[in-house]
Length: 209
Ligand code: ADP
Ligand code: TYD
Image (cartoon, rainbow, N blue to C red; front, side):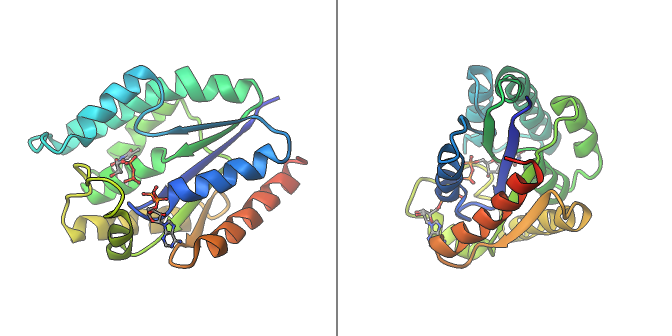
């Protein structure tokens, strides 16, 4: 049996890490095995690439270089971690996936269609069964996240970059409404959890889980 592949998207501080814990609980209570992973990152090589990508000292990184390193990290992660877990029938929950590259590199960096093309090779065509987009205005997200950890290289971009990222997510939600579900992330943690659970229950009904 093939497992389920669920991804979380949204700007910094939108609540992805918080809600992933709830999603994990939803599936473990159904007796399913869950693998929680993230991008950029996952296996050893992808985590090394993550360090390069997020290092605030790498200010000279070209946009195209950045796009290829995200894609390289993903290519390794998909083949070494995600596909084997799906083949074992597990539920893979991933904090960010290709949609982040569309939002941040295609829209944020204005690299356009090349990003989707490169990522078709990186993923080998693997696409999530469901993506939850936690939509929040960048300023609110930034304020929430500021207490947690230092900003990464992309968090330091100006506000117009983060507005374009949000536009990118909006474009995906219009193009793929079945897979890519927008949830207003300005509410309370409990309110957002309830909305996510409705999406998960619908998915489980469709898949007879
Ligand atoms: P992300 O993983 O998207 O960066 P986090 O889940 O780490 O976001 O949340 C960032 C911060 O905001 C954390 O301190 C978290 O407790 C807080 N937070 C998460 N969701 C909400 C919410 N709905 N309302 C207020 N604060 C929240
Ligand atoms: P991370 O700390 O994992 O996420 P968050 O900001 O939600 O806490 O940082 C990942 C950063 O990398 C984030 O700024 C978004 C960015 N990113 C891309 O630009 N492209 C991608 O393909 C991915 C996966 C992430």
